[in-house]
Length: 296
Length: 296
Image: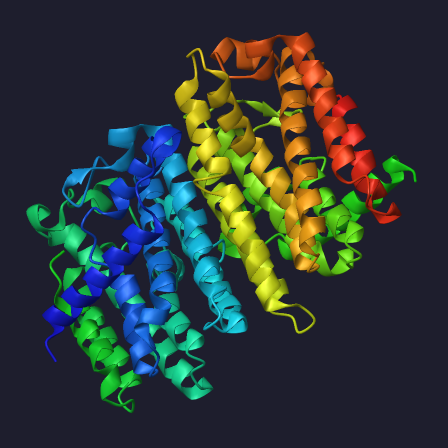
């Protein structure tokens, strides 16, 4: 299979669906919707929804039935970026080569755009989940996984410890806590929820969980390395910001070389976890290899 | 019936359930959970969960089966207060007689505590909705209503226009837009979701909708009047802040006397909407009367 055309095709599906689920509004709501859409259509890689759809395919499900859930994952990821960039958090002015949300719309509207994206993500899941061809109990189970991954024991919990650890020397267990939650939890959930919506058997779910966990950590380590030595023109934001803020990262704790080794061994682990699955899992394998080499 | 003991009993049920759904965490998550619980257990009136439970009772449902949903309503209300109080929004230092969340935990953690409360609210709905005695399709339908009421076309949408209208002379239709969304939508949803979870027939849902809409607007007008002429010691925050910020309110547009008349006529409208319902709707009637006279 050709990964590039696979990614392109899925990205296009996701973007059309996002545009349907969150169309530009008129009248008094116009500005809020413009703020939400500014960040939602900022050229993201759509890794989380694509992982979700690839997981659905690996479980012999129909990705078209799961587009709503895939879009919800992207909307939650986007809300987290908007809030992350706010002055009281990372105070970033550039994201994907463009001014961050609050630089364009102001802090209040950026805050509200993030709140709305998080809420609308769940709205889309419910809207799709009520359709007669869906299994409502599976939808609730998958949505529970997503809320766990995004909430106080997941992404937001990781963010909180990340912020509180700035400028401190962190121990490996704290770094593990931050990474597994801040990025890892949502990537793990992207994969797992695909399997849950398809009613995949327990042993498949278990393999995909190991895949998702290894890939989530690999993804964050690659992010850390790119922040340390990436090309700002390619990643679309400032580099070496983690270092200047005293952020807890893999390169800070273990050095870039050791981080690169860890990254490769995690990608191997991810591929190994789904080795026994048939050719429908091929996109998941290729995505794992792509994560290790991506330059933005 | 004695409304005071009804409210006290339901409030106690809700608070015990909130404590179960969001217990204090240990270890690295301790601070984030403390921040969430600081605002969640700050002596709120619990009007939204109580309205939800009263609506369930009016539809002959079992309120104990709907405690999770009731708590989700309160968690969403609480998140909106935390974000509202932030410096980039209303910049309030006092809420319910205590320092606001960001005054105690800092802006970053207050932002994250709000994000987490919103996410955990949905987590609780899913967790309860997966139990075998629940009807998963009704849960999805009710959750959809809630997300619509809380999101870009509901509460957050109202907030955005409220913020953008500060200091401007607003027309009655803009004030109506703000009020029906900022406060009205969640109160309407508190009532409607109770009926939906019980599978209430269409005509009952329609009556409760009219009740919820009238009550939601009444509630906001009472809030506006209290901000204009309430007792700061009783309401636990500064008064006349709407006026100093040039906020769009009923008293600003119509004067206090006219606002009071509108409030009373809305409460009558709410009571009238459920006139034909039996004695199980009595708490809803009494709550409507209470909203008109509350002093905090």
